[in-house]
Amino acid sequence: MLVVLVRHGDAAFGVPDATRELTSRGKEEVHNAFLTYRDFRHRSILGNNDANGGLGRSASFRLMASPFLRAQQTAELITKVMEADGLQSPAATSSFLEPEADPNDVVALIEKAQTQGVTELWLVAHNPLLSTLLSLLVDGECQSQSQSQSPLATAEIVELEVEWVGLGCATVGFRA
Image 1 (cartoon, rainbow, N blue to C red):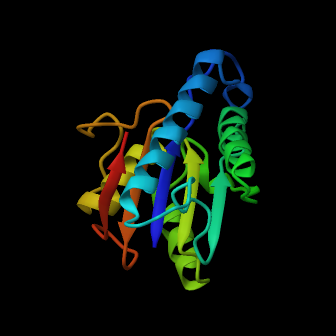
Image 2: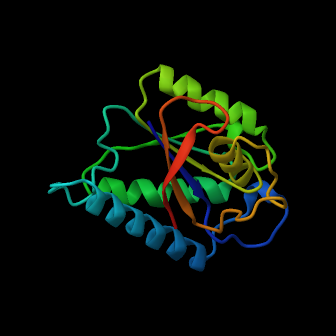
Protein backbone atom coordinates (compact mmCIF):
# COMPACT_ATOMS: atom_id res chain seq x y z
CA MET A 1 0.00 0.00 0.00
CA LEU A 2 1.18 3.52 -0.77
CA VAL A 3 0.35 6.27 1.71
CA VAL A 4 1.01 9.74 0.33
CA LEU A 5 1.21 12.55 2.87
CA VAL A 6 0.63 16.05 1.51
CA ARG A 7 0.97 19.19 3.58
CA HIS A 8 -1.15 22.10 2.37
CA GLY A 9 0.50 24.99 0.54
CA ASP A 10 1.42 28.36 2.01
CA ALA A 11 -1.63 29.96 3.62
CA ALA A 12 -2.56 33.50 4.52
CA PHE A 13 -2.58 34.46 8.19
CA GLY A 14 -5.98 34.85 9.75
CA VAL A 15 -8.51 33.87 12.34
CA PRO A 16 -10.18 31.49 12.63
CA ASP A 17 -7.50 29.03 11.63
CA ALA A 18 -9.95 26.74 9.82
CA THR A 19 -10.79 29.43 7.24
CA ARG A 20 -7.25 30.39 6.21
CA GLU A 21 -6.88 30.30 2.41
CA LEU A 22 -3.94 29.34 0.25
CA THR A 23 -1.92 32.27 -1.01
CA SER A 24 -1.05 32.50 -4.71
CA ARG A 25 2.42 31.27 -3.72
CA GLY A 26 0.80 28.35 -1.88
CA LYS A 27 -1.23 27.38 -4.94
CA GLU A 28 1.91 27.47 -7.08
CA GLU A 29 3.81 25.38 -4.47
CA VAL A 30 1.11 22.71 -4.53
CA HIS A 31 0.94 22.61 -8.31
CA ASN A 32 4.73 22.34 -8.68
CA ALA A 33 5.07 19.74 -5.89
CA PHE A 34 2.38 17.58 -7.46
CA LEU A 35 3.99 17.77 -10.92
CA THR A 36 7.37 16.84 -9.38
CA TYR A 37 5.81 13.84 -7.66
CA ARG A 38 3.94 12.80 -10.80
CA ASP A 39 7.25 13.00 -12.68
CA PHE A 40 8.92 10.81 -10.04
CA ARG A 41 6.14 8.24 -10.31
CA HIS A 42 6.42 8.22 -14.09
CA ARG A 43 10.18 7.61 -13.93
CA SER A 44 9.93 4.99 -11.18
CA ILE A 45 7.51 2.72 -13.03
CA LEU A 46 9.71 0.67 -15.34
CA GLY A 47 8.44 0.64 -18.88
CA ASN A 48 5.51 2.87 -18.01
CA ASN A 49 4.06 4.74 -20.95
CA ASP A 50 1.50 6.41 -18.74
CA ALA A 51 2.11 10.19 -18.69
CA ASN A 52 0.72 10.54 -15.18
CA GLY A 53 3.00 7.86 -13.71
CA GLY A 54 0.15 5.60 -12.67
CA LEU A 55 -1.20 8.19 -10.24
CA GLY A 56 -4.72 7.36 -9.20
CA ARG A 57 -4.78 4.18 -11.27
CA SER A 58 -4.14 1.81 -8.38
CA ALA A 59 -6.69 -0.93 -7.90
CA SER A 60 -8.21 1.18 -5.16
CA PHE A 61 -7.28 4.85 -4.84
CA ARG A 62 -8.55 7.21 -2.12
CA LEU A 63 -7.79 10.88 -1.42
CA MET A 64 -8.78 12.36 1.95
CA ALA A 65 -8.35 15.92 3.25
CA SER A 66 -8.74 17.89 6.42
CA PRO A 67 -11.90 20.03 6.55
CA PHE A 68 -9.75 23.17 6.97
CA LEU A 69 -10.01 25.42 3.91
CA ARG A 70 -6.33 25.43 2.96
CA ALA A 71 -6.23 21.60 2.93
CA GLN A 72 -9.47 21.46 0.91
CA GLN A 73 -7.97 23.91 -1.61
CA THR A 74 -4.79 21.83 -1.80
CA ALA A 75 -6.80 18.66 -2.45
CA GLU A 76 -8.85 20.49 -5.08
CA LEU A 77 -5.69 21.60 -6.92
CA ILE A 78 -4.38 18.03 -6.93
CA THR A 79 -7.67 16.57 -8.17
CA LYS A 80 -7.88 19.18 -10.95
CA VAL A 81 -4.51 18.09 -12.32
CA MET A 82 -5.51 14.42 -11.99
CA GLU A 83 -8.79 15.13 -13.80
CA ALA A 84 -6.89 16.93 -16.57
CA ASP A 85 -4.93 13.68 -16.93
CA GLY A 86 -8.20 11.77 -17.28
CA LEU A 87 -8.44 10.51 -13.70
CA GLN A 88 -11.44 10.75 -11.41
CA SER A 89 -10.31 11.29 -7.83
CA PRO A 90 -12.79 13.20 -5.67
CA ALA A 91 -11.51 14.02 -2.19
CA ALA A 92 -13.29 12.85 0.96
CA THR A 93 -13.13 14.98 4.11
CA SER A 94 -12.02 13.67 7.51
CA SER A 95 -11.82 15.48 10.84
CA PHE A 96 -9.07 12.97 11.73
CA LEU A 97 -6.80 15.13 9.52
CA GLU A 98 -7.18 18.41 11.42
CA PRO A 99 -3.91 19.97 12.71
CA GLU A 100 -4.25 18.86 16.34
CA ALA A 101 -5.86 15.49 15.63
CA ASP A 102 -4.54 12.34 17.28
CA PRO A 103 -2.04 10.66 14.92
CA ASN A 104 -3.08 7.27 16.33
CA ASP A 105 -6.55 7.90 14.86
CA VAL A 106 -4.90 8.44 11.46
CA VAL A 107 -2.93 5.20 11.85
CA ALA A 108 -6.28 3.48 12.51
CA LEU A 109 -7.72 5.22 9.42
CA ILE A 110 -4.83 3.88 7.32
CA GLU A 111 -5.32 0.38 8.73
CA LYS A 112 -9.05 0.51 7.94
CA ALA A 113 -8.33 1.65 4.38
CA GLN A 114 -5.87 -1.21 3.95
CA THR A 115 -8.41 -3.77 5.18
CA GLN A 116 -10.90 -2.29 2.68
CA GLY A 117 -8.43 -3.03 -0.12
CA VAL A 118 -7.21 0.54 -0.69
CA THR A 119 -3.82 0.33 -2.38
CA GLU A 120 -3.07 4.07 -2.60
CA LEU A 121 -4.19 6.50 0.11
CA TRP A 122 -3.51 10.24 -0.10
CA LEU A 123 -3.82 12.30 3.09
CA VAL A 124 -3.89 16.11 2.72
CA ALA A 125 -3.40 17.74 6.09
CA HIS A 126 -1.30 19.94 8.39
CA ASN A 127 1.55 20.05 10.84
CA PRO A 128 1.98 19.08 13.59
CA LEU A 129 -0.16 16.07 12.64
CA LEU A 130 1.74 15.07 9.49
CA SER A 131 5.22 15.37 11.02
CA THR A 132 4.14 13.34 14.05
CA LEU A 133 2.44 10.75 11.83
CA LEU A 134 5.55 10.44 9.67
CA SER A 135 7.65 9.87 12.78
CA LEU A 136 5.25 7.17 14.03
CA LEU A 137 5.04 5.32 10.73
CA VAL A 138 8.73 5.46 9.79
CA ASP A 139 10.61 5.61 13.11
CA GLY A 140 8.04 4.01 15.40
CA GLU A 141 8.32 7.00 17.73
CA CYS A 142 5.82 9.71 18.55
CA GLN A 143 7.88 12.83 17.96
CA SER A 144 6.05 16.13 17.75
CA GLN A 145 6.82 18.65 15.02
CA SER A 146 9.14 20.53 17.39
CA GLN A 147 11.07 17.32 18.18
CA SER A 148 11.21 16.11 14.59
CA GLN A 149 14.47 16.49 12.70
CA SER A 150 12.59 17.46 9.55
CA PRO A 151 8.97 18.61 9.80
CA LEU A 152 7.04 18.72 6.54
CA ALA A 153 7.36 22.00 4.66
CA THR A 154 4.37 23.63 2.99
CA ALA A 155 3.24 21.67 -0.08
CA GLU A 156 5.66 18.87 0.73
CA ILE A 157 4.73 15.40 -0.51
CA VAL A 158 5.99 12.23 1.18
CA GLU A 159 5.30 8.81 -0.30
CA LEU A 160 5.37 5.94 2.17
CA GLU A 161 5.48 2.27 1.27
CA VAL A 162 3.46 0.32 3.84
CA GLU A 163 3.24 -3.49 3.94
CA TRP A 164 1.43 -3.67 7.29
CA VAL A 165 0.13 -0.87 9.49
CA GLY A 166 1.76 -0.11 12.84
CA LEU A 167 4.62 1.75 14.47
CA GLY A 168 7.72 1.81 12.27
CA CYS A 169 5.89 0.08 9.42
CA ALA A 170 6.74 2.43 6.57
CA THR A 171 9.67 3.28 4.35
CA VAL A 172 9.97 6.58 2.55
CA GLY A 173 9.84 6.17 -1.23
CA PHE A 174 9.74 9.87 -2.11
CA ARG A 175 10.03 13.14 -0.25
CA ALA A 176 10.09 16.63 -1.74
